[in-house]
Image 1: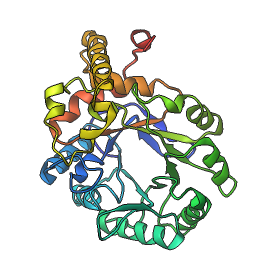
Image 2: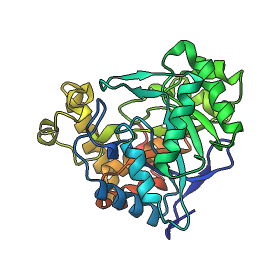
Image 3: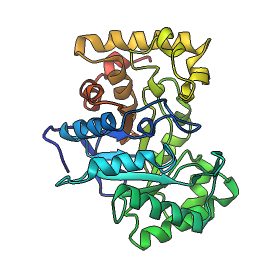
Length: 315
């Protein structure tokens, strides 16, 4: 859709969208001014990162209304403005911020419609290519939420619809209303729970899979150190996460060192190898990778087409 480089592509489930194996994840560019933020972020750096990824061939961006309470979508919209050819744009709803800053889940029809209309305004689009339920919360309303997305798709406000963080049982329930086109689960070498049921189910059912946090939210990049983690700002959600604290931290940093060793003969960083590992799973169509500045983009994209099957055996 845009860019001058050639990256490996695949069809996203049965959507007909031919996507690059790596997409631009816009969670971190929402900044730190909310509960699940990543600390201070410069919008100019974010736009430059998006443009660099597109220049190198990435053809989709994944964001959400809740990232930075709309800020991520506004930044994505600014980056898209004036492009001759835009990438596919995916966003998510169902997480709503109140006036007190508290985030709650809503799967009500009216709420999801308002969210999508607001997302389209921030993004500067008439329709998104993929609209997703962000979380199955409250769980008893998943059928209403999914029915609402079917209606929004039928009205042309979204071309395709999917979900994120749903279990197999929840996928079965909403699948009785309409086929589920895509799923976003967390998946990485430090978060492998999806391997047990979710990924096999999606592969069997033809559901497109976009995995998020394939580098373990940064702990597998090869650039994370104990000192850097200790210095994370208080508004970076990772500061208090068990993955970034002992005893998990020591194991994760050792794993990152191992990934760096594997990648060295191929000229690949630990992060690129971590991404390649997720993409080696046959159920996975694409990996959502967050970039916060243009300098981060080039080295990571090597993971999109790397064949490291032998080197990764046993991880």
